[in-house]
Length: 183
Image (cartoon, rainbow, N blue to C red):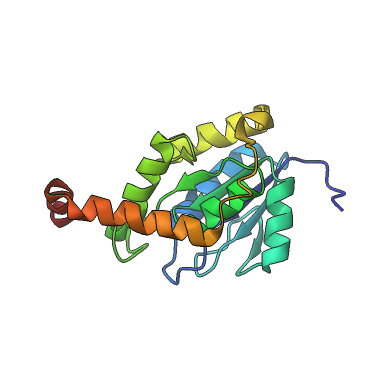
């Protein structure tokens, strides 16, 4: 039961072992501009803790799910697990994909996956600090814009299979391979 009446923003970097300090930095800057008007809970994994937030290296699944259901906004990395979990909790996730160029992942599959998901309206994509700020400010001003009918029929297994198919389709195209080699 929540006793804090401030709007809740939940941030999760997922379970990958690569740090995602870029997202932590963006959230920290955004929080600094909000004062004490927002409660922010961050599951930060191997990333640095976010000043001004309640940080946890890892949260038990039940607690993470409960926080998602309470949150005005859920921010997650671009893996299928966080996206699926957010949507099944009735939240349109604000998604920041990891990039290999910054050592956040082994390749750029999250960038390609989230572009496809954003094009279908399944996520709110934030590719920059400014886009993340805009999504968070909009979600706090009108939380209903970041609510969805829960994806009760979409299991993590089904989403993972969709993810595999989308990535497979992307890399099997000759043009997609050229982009991968250049990236």
